[in-house]
Length: 186
Length: 228
Image (cartoon, each protein chain N blue to C red):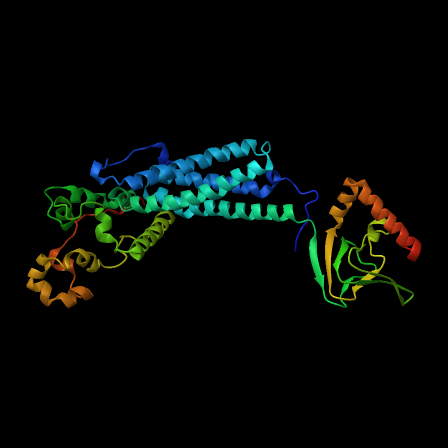
């Protein structure tokens, strides 16, 4: 699963970096002690405490750098669904907006026990944004896949930030939401 | 606690107990020691610099510095530190730094009038360097590892005060430690006792020290000698 970069904290602010620093400093001090004057105690302390501290620092830093690269070069989560799978249900709390890459989905709404198909969406279209514009953060319809589907999912927090950062994008989504409300109601 | 503190900060007291002779210095080891010392120092200085300036550095510079300080330097120090440490660990001074009560054995070994086996080996340069290690650790990688592993156990027992008095050897002295040097020598083969009893000697049924011992001068150890 890929994660988002919008609003990502700078690498320097990563709190795990401080742990790396402390571990490395301890490890280097034990190493210095052992190298300067090798005695049974100084070498044992290096092996028992210094080496694990240095290894912890190295492994943690590599993981942090990999994680940073992953965040830097990925914006969306990639999600894949089989035909007939439910992506979300009407009334559920919304946490993301979806952009269709491959396949087709069916948008349905249930009112008074009767299910109505509102739309069929395909590649290049998006859905899931209505919850952030017109309702209290809950899904206004259900979405089920008609075929095998590949979606790019953008999380709620980053979607909101994106709208705030790029007014043109917000305008585009608002217009689409207004059009959908006009056609199908809230 | 005072001895722990003194050893913990032994880098503040740069004393080399015995200055090695020029031909006893291994230049590779010396350079490895210098490199690992330099790397450890560089790691500390770079760490202090990063602690102060990390928020002022650009993302890319910071990541390269982190890569160097937290990944490359630690791996260098671990690699070189182990090589240097394991080599230094063969020296008599190193053994004596933990085996405090065996200082008597070292003094006896260096005593030119002593007739103990250890003293004869030392005096005649049969065992020219790393004398403790030459007779008390088996050859090969696993001999070293086993010796260090037992050393680590003893270290923990000493500081946890979980050892039993009187202190005893882990196992009876193995004939293999003598045979690894002596068995194929002409002098060894000259002795009819060695030839006739070779199987028993090899199996340990007949101990070398039973005829040739003791290896060290006898020592009376008081209970106070162990710091209790």
